[in-house]
Image (cartoon, rainbow, N blue to C red; front, side, top):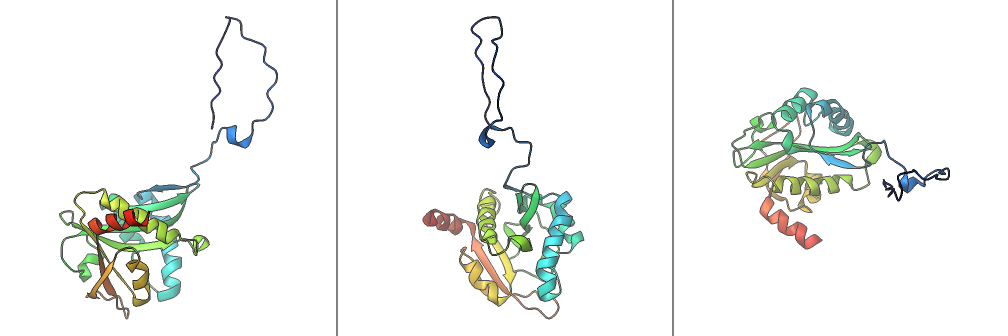
Length: 206
């Protein structure tokens, strides 16, 4: 958007010719930003759950977080979330909370412990219309950078099914063994990532 300045040479306004339509690059925009990354709020919970439900229930029959749990974490620790919005529409998101033990337990699925130095990444989900575009990778890099700006957060942990382990290893996560958490018949591998090491990895990838 450009802004035209007129410098008056006399106190009498000059007679200007009629202006034609401005090119698109000069037109004032009254739309939302084309692409925006920001922390989620409780008002985003329903949109996030709709994306998550489609992504996970269709595959495994259950969600990492249900609507009331999303609302819970976005109320207690919105700074540990990150959403990708395109023209105001949520297209991908991550939700996390703080944990204060070395390994994840069943309690870590629902608790936020403000004294902890570990961010537990609960869920990463991408809207079905925007998959296979690399959005999950871009969002995860940004999320790790976002966490790295928070001095109290020293590492990130998550649990995932075995086929997803290589995906997270690309971002500096290392498997630490089978996770103690089970969800129904599902079992998981637990992974962790040092934010200090992650910052170095991002610098080397630039």
